[in-house]
Image (cartoon, rainbow, N blue to C red; front, side, top):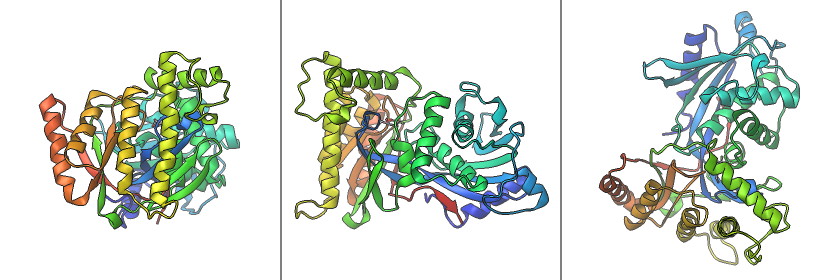
Length: 412
Ligand code: GAF
């Protein structure tokens, strides 16, 4: 499914007008992500290598004062009053078939005041006020999403980015990419209460189409790495286990804390300052395993970049990264202990079906795995995974191909 077809803009405008009774100013999109490699390294100031996928959150934005006077334009939002509400309607529906919808005012926002999906846009509004002093109010948003929720493809971060870039344009905030990434991260950490790193927001904001984003999470330096699956006759499959996960739960935060404690014991500001030659002797067994994952994963990200770029006179080789994906999964499952039986089954079955490599992605404990597959073997790999899930009595997985789409932007 493409992220934004020529139909997307007109459809968003039509829906917005039908719901709110006046035309929107503009529409924007922000993609979900697949992290090729570099898992649980971001909050340790390490390396990550995500792609933006061709599935996205789309948002049409309007301002009630302007809508009423038929004014149009960017960066010209009428002065907002904090007590004027922000209304949001989504194309997702509840059990009764009603569209998800909600509203809040900037005035009433305190961390914890809102739960569920609405907390993500609310966090962005709250952070905009704190960072720029701009009070958002009198705004209407209509949201559609092709990023599956709870699949570990960063649907909530994509929602935050989409809302932020819409508000940035309409209020003329002039935030650069780096500021957008950091602001949405603070919304997630401080307002939503999930202690996540920065890979998901960066992937959505900073990635160029046809590339993976090599990001140094210590200083947010980036390099766009060519990632052309078609040129090598490859497909990247997402295997959504449909086991849902949450970053607010303890497993993620516990691991983050353990890494920070271990870095302190080893006399480092973060695990990024260390490499695989460091003496792990002073650490407990649990700390040692987690540190080993982070240090080896950073090395695997660099090795993956070398293969994709073709270092040392070698030609580029996407196929060669399969082994690194498998090693990453192994490390996440056994050293970092964030996999689950369904993810392990997905990886093992994809491999036995002929995938070049496979691994869990995202925080873990559910969500999705990816498999790098020759295009001639897509069906065989899919069948192997479906059969293995049936054998174990697991719910059938959702399997689909993704490609390296473009980062967030306006929909024409
Ligand atoms: C989640 C988090 F949101 C990211 O910041 C990252 O830590 C990832 O888990 C693990 O690599 O997606």
